[in-house]
Length: 313
Image (cartoon, rainbow, N blue to C red):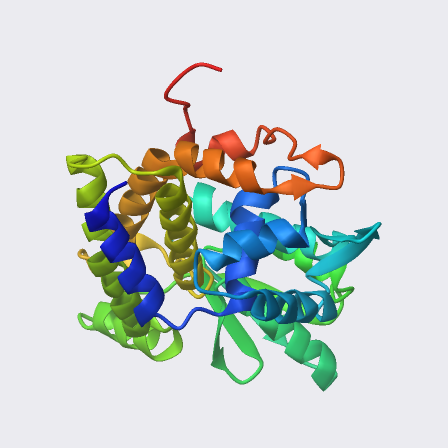
């Protein structure tokens, strides 16, 4: 066991305000989603103890997740099991794509504009929430914009919400009419997207996890499976919380020192280093209604460009 890494792990747990519901969501998305999506409450309690949560806190957190339709419960005898709901599975899959597999795409230089007129307030609020998840920002009354959105995803959203007849979608370009047009666009970006807040959060993330990355590379002491699980879970927990607020703007519209690129590289390198011993610990604790957890699905092995076991099995 690495005493240096354990000190860093303990410092993160002690200094950061960890939310039980959010951390359980991280564990479900990272470790459980591709292994059947279900786990016993007793197993979950044991895993959460590693992060300072007691039995009561875990039970309260899963109750809230059930209430909000993220999880549902099954009881077999005296044992309770919690699993991802059908309604939340698509959200977990969307989050997974953004965390593990998303790549910065080349911008086609076009902006997508959504004009929302003649919509009832409830529909408008729901659409704005979903568009913000996709990275759109409200740049004017009833007008949301994003530079180069995934148009198939936008189409699916409007169809799912039954709002295809309630919005008008435009595709536009910015014109460099003046010498200071680029600066004007930059000010508009700063005003409507949380760019500086994201920069600060990425830099904080790098400050914390670079130390872990260096410790793993130096390998002065072997890392234990328990430590690997703690590192992997904390890494994805904090990285996820940033990414799900990041509109993933084209790199062409951001500064040359934008820290998201370094944060992704660091996350990938740490994850590939610890995922195998972390799984070893997780599988020694976790149980499903059928007994041992099932093998991970093929999608799991595609994370961060492909995970490879250090030894053949």
